[in-house]
Image (tube, rainbow over all chains, first blue to last red; front, side, top):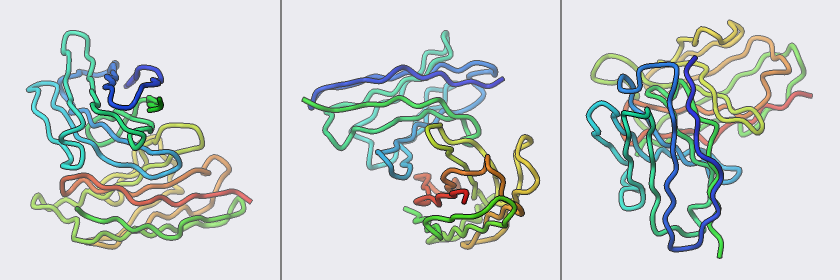
Length: 114
Length: 112
């Protein structure tokens, strides 16, 4: 069945970057775009952007354009998101999800603290 | 950005009672393709969100038929005909017609 397996929790310092992964299985990786979504503690969901694994093309939410970088490695069916210049506002759970948000990863917690 | 407004914020219902959640968008979600990309997801406590309904009223295969979706343009509704224990969690509507994708603020369903 379709699975998206995300990397584990990260504790990072303000100003640092973090790179998280999302490994897909159970379907043809290049057939479906991958979205990234942010959920701040106890709050709703924010769309960060998506990447097309086939072409590498991306589409970002303007709010996250200078913050997030999406990439893929087709050979390992893995999508990556790098978040830079982290602040406490970036502490959240980050999800990857497939095209129509029809399958979600388990989430990766990022805590930004000195 | 399209603003999605969900009501109520929370519901507390007994097993067997019906539930209704409203979702309103700040602009029409009817796309140029003629499709309306208004969808519903459920996030159970401590879990990642899961798919429920897509394009207003289409249930994913694993979703029980006690769930239904309706609406058009800017006003949409999710209904549960008879709430069951496994239905607790936070329901979100989200739109995929306009970029950026946007989500409602969620409706928390508690079981009495």
